[in-house]
Image 1 (spheres, rainbow over the protein chains, first blue to last red):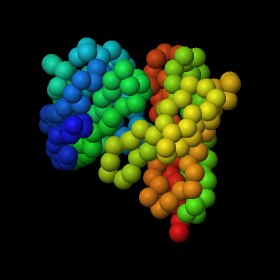
Image 2 (tube, rainbow over the protein chains, first blue to last red):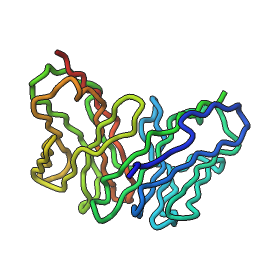
Image 3 (cartoon, chains in turn blue, purple):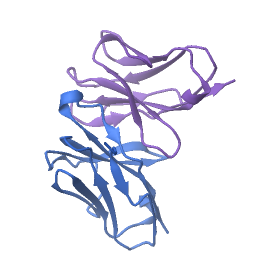
Length: 115
Length: 109
């Protein structure tokens, strides 16, 4: 298996633009997580899905952030409009309840820079 | 949210045993405590997971006291390649996933 795949790996955009981050989880995994990592705040859980259904989005910072999981093999995290304070590394992770709920497999991350 | 604390950084020499402790209050009584390792420009990688007492796998041991207010990750005989940031992950009573602030381990030759 190729592991969790994220695209793009790097994104540079200007304030006010829409940004879409993409994730393909490991096949067969039931859970998908989106995290944000910054020096100031560390790793923060934004939202997670179980069987394509959002379970907890309390970590989503504002209405500018939205996430979808239209099927078991694809998820997006969208920021509209983007702001400089959204600059961070965004990780997607997936896990399978059968092997331990919290053994999450992380993707390589998307480094977002908003100018 | 549960509050977690870890030492910001630690230094060690090759071949030594390293113990990193995470303090966590208000964690759910029936959820696991998990530790992750992160190298620069990579996502975190699972190391070990436990519920109570002691768990050991091929790379580490995890010690969890009965009150579960802390956990200690033990890395036996570290090498230069163990230089990384180590995070604990807990779940609190609100079912929130909370990563610790991370401990930057530097292994020196």
